Image 1 (cartoon, rainbow, N blue to C red):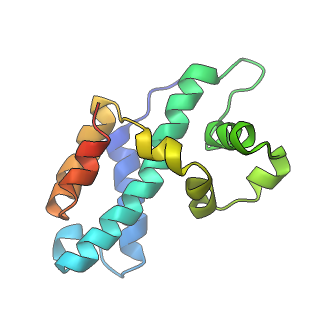
Image 2: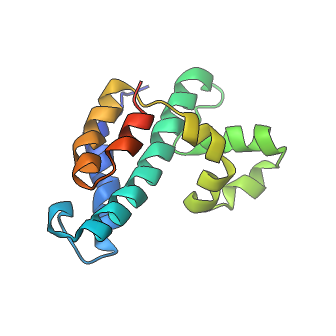
Length: 133
């Protein structure tokens, strides 16, 4: 399994969240908007990192658990859902279904370092610290 480039991943999630505000840089936004954009990006990033973590522990040659499939597996097991029910969830719904798991998930040092500076600048340093190993 190839190692995730967390800086690229964080940047992708941050840029996607910024695009909803017609902005290109977090630093150009007002304080409230910075928190909102960074929080949205972090939720998506956390789901990706959680899925990577589950994949590293549970992936098998017969089931690679690519993409968000690893997080979907946990939702299936937790809620006793069928796979087609989970596949139909959007990322917001999947984050809600896995809220406790994501809330308690600790980011690796590399994953934490990729987002910590932007979260601190956005006034969300406590959020980042909650997920630090």
